[in-house]
Length: 405
Image 1: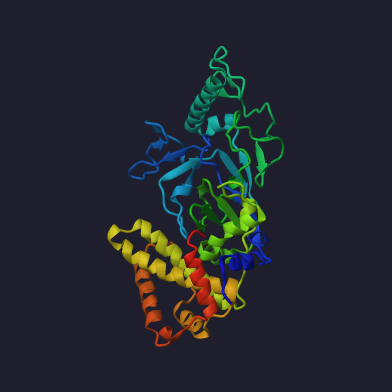
Image 2: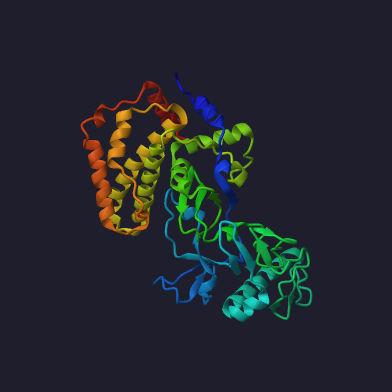
């Protein structure tokens, strides 16, 4: 059978299970234009005790560390592993209860002033400027120094009061407001983002540039911009799903959106990603194999950004090798289920799972070990004899020739 682009997209569209079926939640990240979730940069020495440099400002600002959380910009994301960055976001809230569904409370302005005075002054400064700019833009003048939209009284935040939808005791449960809505003109401009519900919860972060880039955030403490967060019901699936979202199957997904009219612009939305087809191998050992390779790729991508430039080519060669293997395995699961059994045996003999969280290690010996595994696979007497059937070869050719997806 000749597999055209339409044949592949049609087959993927018919897969009954989706990402929504295995997820607790799929939610949008924090908008990068959110001023009160203020992005700051650590000092050049990356010292957390030094003053922070705020975005678009030319002065240092001291902000309490308790309010700082790691930040991942969409432009800095990378497939398989979150690229390290010195940027942080300032989030004024407390976590009240741990668990997958976290309960948290926004810190009221009066409480913020007492507990975190420097952060209070900085937020007040941002709010004053924001409201002044908005008022000047709207009316071209200030009314006796008083702003009616999002009130400022005598240079203070007004007790957390919202005139257009009151926040019930400043409390939010599982990313949902008990009463009203956080109004960006009156409060911290958190709006309806669920990211605060999942601080400390392992998740996958996915951004959409020219193609999907999915990163597994094992610690779950990253605040991200312009991306989608995925919290899975089964923690054991994270590495497998990360590999699937990064494979060539994902390049066909925009065509599914187009057919089903889910996409109206260039932005990525949770409702679209919920439709992503999910297939699992019949043999559990294959799933474990793909998950292990995914962990290899997390380690290699992480090392690529923290190692010297002279070693980048070596890392990229290994990344390309293991990514190609994962891609072949996933394509077979989704479309043909007919790989050479000996090919699978060779991979399983050399790529063995481990409980150790090696993917976040900085040990260079792991890279050497992965080079050795690659060599053992390629040097296996039967490896060159393994063959792909004509159908599978045709699928690979079609995907390669349709590089746009």
